[in-house]
Amino acid sequence: MYTREFWDMVYRRHIYDAPWMSDSCVRAHMTNIEKYISDVNGLDLLDYGCGSGELAFHFFKKGARVDLADISDELIAWLKKKYAKEDIGIYCVETPKELQRNQKQYDIIVATSFFHHIEPDLWKTFLQDFAALLKQGGLLIIGGWDQTDEVIAEDKNTARFTGQKTWPLNDMRALIEQMDEYEIKVNTLENLQIDAFSIPRKIRYYILKKQ
Ligand SMILES: C[S@@+](CC[C@H](N)C(=O)[O-])C[C@H]1O[C@@H](n2cnc3c(N)ncnc32)[C@H](O)[C@@H]1O
Image (cartoon, rainbow, N blue to C red; front, side):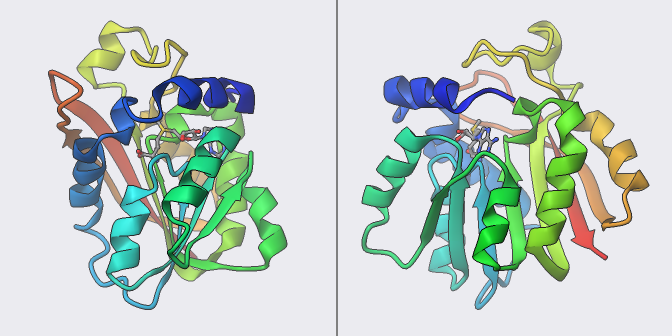
């Protein structure tokens, strides 16, 4: 897992121009995800590894109660100013387990463009910790690079922007299938066309339902 110091360094330099902070990136995830969750009014939603926070804020405006969580102190300080007037919980954490201290469970957890930055050895623990934060029947929505993505194949699993190794999500399905915590509702590959990238990226989405 990249460290808090690493992400703080990224956000000190690139809080406005990192590709995932762009409107077009957020909109692309939103369009893909809204196929699976349309009516969020009154639901509790957590955006983990939230970046700009705009994905969750979109659902907040549609009536969801929203919490944001991210590892970067720099980002969290910026988000606290940005959403100072909104009733949104904002947490700086390194693992979803740390959120268990709030004794709150969610109907929906979103983790987009996140898991490919986490070593597969840690995926199971993260998935178990997310399950503990979900209500029965709640959804965990994961989106991240797939091995079939041309850019990932070309760059040998290195993220272009951060220059760090990434771990594509296509292998996650086998892991999820061994876990008792979830049933897979959808496992799909979608394009993520954003202005910052000249070619569409391929994103693997998993929509997991807590059993
Ligand atoms: C590529 S960005 C994606 C942001 C956002 N989810 C999106 O789709 O635009 C990855 C985010 O995950 C955060 N992150 C990385 N490791 C984390 C961890 N262990 N716990 C919480 N957040 C983490 C980073 O600080 C960064 O904001």
